[in-house]
Image (cartoon, rainbow, N blue to C red; front, side, top):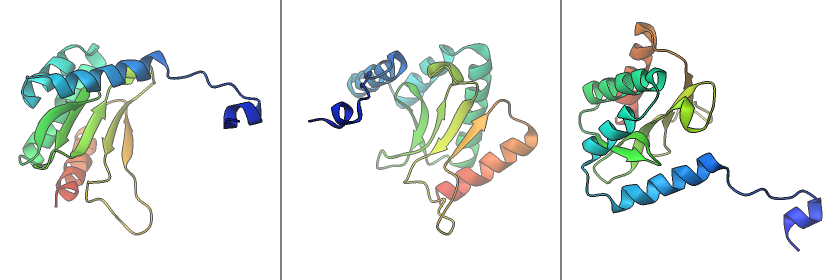
Length: 143
């Protein structure tokens, strides 16, 4: 008997947004676009507020970790190392209908700091101070 039957809770399945993200990922795997072209397309399709943040995300990462390669990851802008492992990513607020965009780092980012550290940040806007923090994190992530 499944856990959902034992607990009495029903499983509703994936949300429309999650299904869309999985379809985007499958499309990425089949795409012949370069990572930069795919990222440009993903950013261009975003609503203005998300697009503004995503463009700054791209600029900050490109300036501070030029060794990372642009790509999309589940339809969202991301940067990967030479082995193709995503290091840092951006998730538009509109993608999952949340009130903030997300800047995240994967487990392959070198951000370890003791037994607990932050791996994602909510973004409503980017100030100069915020951009400096992100730049430092990106540099640490690839160190």
